[in-house]
Image 1 (tube, helix red, strand yellow):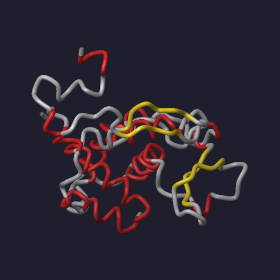
Image 2 (spheres, rainbow, N blue to C red):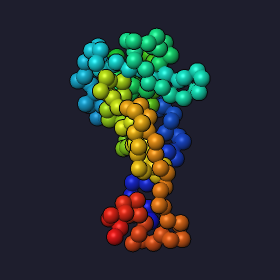
Image 3 (tube, rainbow, N blue to C red):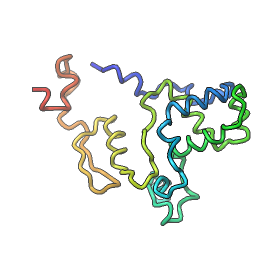
Length: 194
């Protein structure tokens, strides 16, 4: 009853979070270039490409998106700009020996640990990254919310603004005993199931 994507969308590989410090710099460069090729050509000094910053609200301890150049939030920024950070790490890796272990680089540049980790996880998690600029001025947070919430069965998205959305969870879902191979995949699309 579960399609082939289920295995590569789950986060069950607990060992993948550990950085392999022995990996050669050349391999990390290749992984970054492969996963973030679209981001490496961006001008990250342009205000439009880094107009926003993610931070955690003090009141509710939840992620918030603020305007970097209009609000004093930069010191609270969370590492939720993988494209920009990947481009910065890729640039910092220039000049390093191809055969050098990435651990040597990270000892001098610990600020790039999260990028190296993401790059090393990428081959086993093909859907592990949002392939968009998460801090650009054209970002619509509701698009990311839709993608994230759809994993949990959310449907019937009702946007209340460009920053939050109301959803229905499992609306019209059959009970497990009502599922069969003929209906399991299409119940969320009522028009298709008929």
